[in-house]
Image 1 (cartoon, helix red, strand yellow):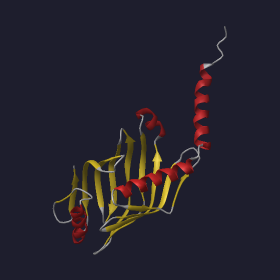
Image 2 (cartoon, rainbow, N blue to C red):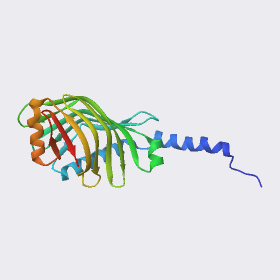
Image 3 (tube, rainbow, N blue to C red):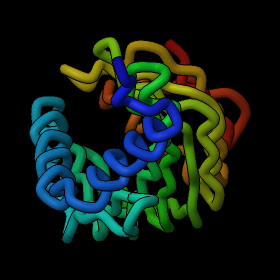
Length: 199
């Protein structure tokens, strides 16, 4: 009996199938749905999140982009030029959870009183799975400098674990004191201009 499936044809067939998914899958509606879920989750935690547009760019190497981001909290507002999510499809398949590299453009935190706190850009490794959303190797640069890791509940948006080091100009310590007093983030003050988020 002849073997109708030739082993040397399996890999090209699998690659062709994967390329077809990347080319023809409706990523635009998926971006909109993901953005809407973020907005709904933030609203449950007392924050109003908005964005100008969300879309996917690239042909085979897809990148998800959200532009004109705003987030209103009780005592401050956060704005960012854009957020780019570069999925690691191979790592996601192997780990059975979504993995990506996240990049954030320039932005600022505007308090109800006091000076704005600005950053020039940043990045982190993102993984989503088992009911949690984890950001590792966070690096944000500018007047606001952040380093470390944090994990959120994917369902409630609450911080599950955190080990973040934050540096700001010491004259803007009042902004972080307001954030700490609001209870939104478990902030702990160190030296002037130095803060930690630990949980």
